[in-house]
Length: 244
Image 1 (cartoon, rainbow, N blue to C red):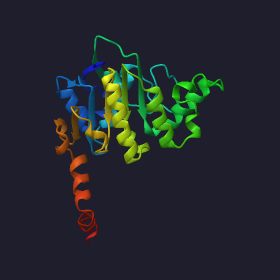
Image 2: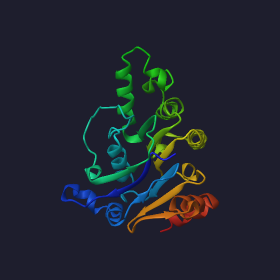
Image 3: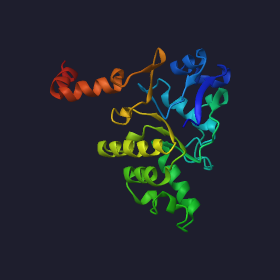
Image 4: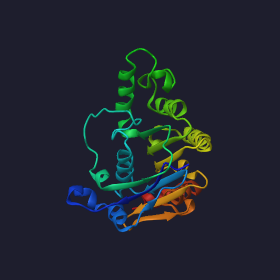
């Protein structure tokens, strides 16, 4: 099930300011479209190549709050999102998702606060998130509780670096939950640096670099190759890193 089929950039207007200098944004402007017509799509690459900027633009264009949350979240602590979404054109699927969530680690605290304030002590809203305040759990526990309790079938889930809150074992648990939800008609678009989270089978992986955006295989990503080289021989890698 695909709720977002593709994204394209209508034009590189002066309003985009710094975003127009990002390699991935320039590449997107030259492409006919970026296909997102898959159950699971990943954006990978070095910091500064435009992964999160594009992910945020897709989420905001679809109707999600820029700081994260579901489609009905309407809080803002500081407007820092790019104007890129204004120039973005999304091709949507025939069916609309029944639910969805834009999950970003950097503003998870703000989203958790909004949820608690919306609950107002009644427990009714929190019941949909596991029944316990997300602030009364560790960052990782709250994050995972949200995924396990709030994420449901027929949903659109846009995740920005979910590994920031999750241990390796929890990352594998996330893959299990993703698989359950994909079988129930959900779609995921994920930015990640984790070779574990990136390993979902039959996914589409886009590598972001100074050269733009290219589709690549799991084993050909830098995320995989660097981690594999380190784990195959950590002592040799450390000697290479530390040699003067």
